[in-house]
Length: 163
Image (cartoon, rainbow, N blue to C red):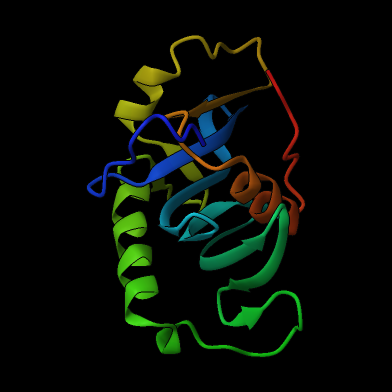
């Protein structure tokens, strides 16, 4: 995250990893995140998790330095593996998650087969992605790198991939 660039409360930050699949631009992983503080974020992750399965889950993460010390994903505390229903999260967190869910829907759509595909607007941003390329990253440059690394790694996505 660039601290000199102010975050807009209206639009969450995002980053996504895309790949060509059956002639479509498919979402491998997309994370939308809104800051709740300097080291606290809430948002949504969507993507492919293997075996023709896709997911879309809310998350809430708090960092101490670069380490996630609080990581809720869906209905679980990812650090303790305890159930923690997202409906019980604090109001500010749930509000940020809802804002991120709405923004995520401007980036991806679900196909009849259950794949998350790029919307027409996101495909336009990905003009450089051709049938010859395996994958590409897109984003608005504002997603905190700790969020990308922690949340995408939690789902086995290649967080450090640069294309």
